Every structure is written in structure tokens, then in C-alpha cells.
Length: 486
Image (cartoon, rainbow, N blue to C red; front, side, top):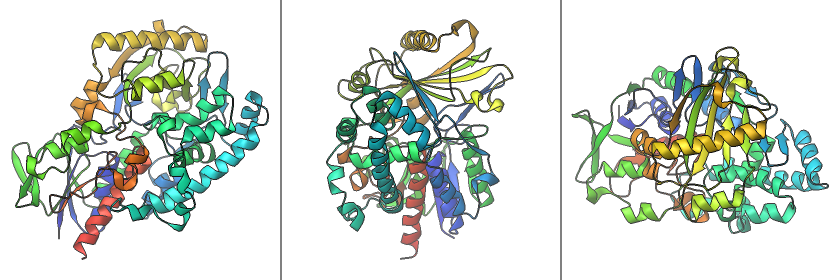
């Protein structure tokens, strides 16, 4: 039986481990932290439960397909509820509520801009076509060659790789609130809408067409499900076990060193940060230079606050976006001229609004996220300064006072992403989805310098986000299975 060592235990690592174990490999997984989950870990404090990483459950079909590959269903592990409304967007003078079906969303668009629902239906129809192509054709390819992008479907859409989301949205909608609503999924997933190929509007179908869901108990329920499935399949999981070196002899991978001991294997898959993974190799075996990594466009980092409130809050939904400031300016301060934002957009998540298990009775669990450029200076003073900015605006826009109701607050920012996840420049979501970083132009799943060394996760194929990470694990497992069956 061939043995595989997997580094890291985020979505992509757990996914790869499950597929490899199912295919008959002996799999050992090494995680540096004391719990599995990578960026999707959990904070439980004083009866409050927080997902400290991903909090949006989009593309339920991808999760369904993943569990179906092991003859299981998501419902075997967790209860999934569709949120209605999906989310609420706060502007300076109005709020937009995104309902749980196209009919409700169209009504809301009409309220803001007469005639816009017709354009919306057309836009989402095209986004759905792109979603079908992306999910069933493009993302399931391992990014080894430009020809993978050439299918009879993508050839007809080739112009959409050279036009941008921003152009497509602004051609159809004039109201800045509607434009921001349609451009937001891209901004949070890692690039300016004016730099993201319009083909990626399939995210808008994921949003409006498939809806926003919540696993009861939080996103960590998915990690728990994957961990128990991996162990059932025979995967051995080691926590508190950082990989300090990837062992190579004459260009062949031998295994890893962890906690001073060498662990040998036929294959190694790293789901840790790609740049960090390469630093575990002797220099001659690294594929990409420091200049290469420095030249890439990264998805944002984040300043996060996890707050326990001693009362129920008013005028909020489970997911809330605060777009009462200049969307374009904040995007520039992330991507064009990296700096702490002068007037940030932010996101607030209150899972206890729909899921009583997430907070003690009569209390509220709050998670606030400010997208920021990776690599910024991160100090306690800056965190406190932005906490005050966010709380002041939150109070004003939701018409309530909350600062005195804060039982505790924990924060997480650039330094924590580096320290806990070895994240390059403290990025939160990997590499941005720009044209020059799409598919085969991303860092490879397979090392070009070390035989039987592979990589998975959001810095490689297919890209950032939870569903792509599940797919990334499957793609790398498929490559290894093919190698063995040659």
C-alpha cells in the first residue's frame, strides 16, 4: 500500500485525505495547530460559538457532490437551513434586503431602479450558464495546460475572459447601490471587479440563484464531518505536529520532518500555504522565487472581531454588509495603493439570529470583518482604532447602542494569519482571480522539481473559497491516483 503524508487540515487537505484513503492509500495528516480545520477553525467562549474563518455557505451543490463521492449526504452530518433573507446591505440612506429567491430579489431591484429586474434576470441567466461551465467543466481540470480551458462551451465565452465583471454590471445597471450589490462577491473573493474576468459572474448565480445557507452549529460542522469521514476511511490525524522540513533525495520526495522526527512516505501533499510549503524545501527544489510571490495579486487579508453581546441586537440579519462608504476607494486601498482603509466597508455576521445554539439565551454572537490589504502593519492600537470606527458606524446604521453590551471581544488580523496559518503576507483568501492568475496560470498542483510532491488549497487550482478548496483536494488526489496507475 502506497503511503501519502498530507500537511495541514483545512478543507483542501481533508478533502484530499478522504479521496486518497478511499482509493486505498495509507494516509497520515499533520496539522500544526491543536485542532483541525486550518482557517476554518472555531472559537467557543462563555457559551458563544464563532466560526473564526469562512462564514458563508454558498454553492451547496459542491458540498453535496463531495459527500456523495463517499456515498454520504450532508444531512448525515449536519442540518442545513436556507437563510431568508440571505443578507442585508446597509447604505448611508437605505438598506437592500436580498431574499431567498429571484422573485424577491427582482422586487427589491425594481424598488431601487425601475426596469432593473429585466436586466437582472438576463444577467443571472448568463451567470448560470457560466456556473454550469465553470463547475462541470473548467474547475474540475487540474490546471496543467492552457488547453484545459478550451472546451466547446468556453470557446463561445472567450470574450468573457477579456471583459470584466465591472464592465458587464455597469453596462446594465446605473444605480450605484445595485452595482455594489452585484460586485461585492468578487471583491470579497479577491480582486477588484474592474480586474476580474466577467466569466466569474458565476458567483452572482451562486449568490442569487442558489442562495445562502447555514449549517446548524456553524461552518465548523463541515470540518467535523470531514474529519470523522477521514478517520472512518482510515486517515491518521496528528495535531500539534507542524512540518518543519519536506525531505527530498535526488529529486524524489521522501516524507517530512515534524517535531524532530522523520516520517517517510511515497507521496507528500501540502495543503499549507504554498509559499510557506516551498520554504520547507531546500532552495534548489523550490519552483517559485521570492520575486514571483511578491509580484502576485493576493486576495485581501482581514481584520476580524469576535464579540459576545449581552443582549439581542435590533435591525440586523444573519449576514450584513455595510456599504455606507465609497466601495471603489476601499478597493483601491486594498489593491492599488495598499494601506489601512480610510473609510472601510465591513461585514457583520450574527449566526445567533437564525441559530440559537450559537449564543447563550438572550445574547448575540457577533463576528465583524474588515477586508484589508495583505502585508500591512498590524498593531493593537490599529485594531482598537478600527474597532471604534466599526462600532460607531454599526450603532449609527442600525439605530442602537451596543458598545456597553460587549461582554468580550477577541481580534484576529495580519499577524495572526502569519503566525497561525503561515499565510503569505497574512492574506486571508489566497490568490486573487485575475486573468493572469486563472487556471493553468496559478501555482501548480504538482511540483515541477520534486517527484511525488503535490500542493493543494487556495493558492493553487481552482482558487479561493470553500467550495474550490474541496475541489482542489479532489484534483490533487486524482493526479496522485493517476501517477500510481500509470
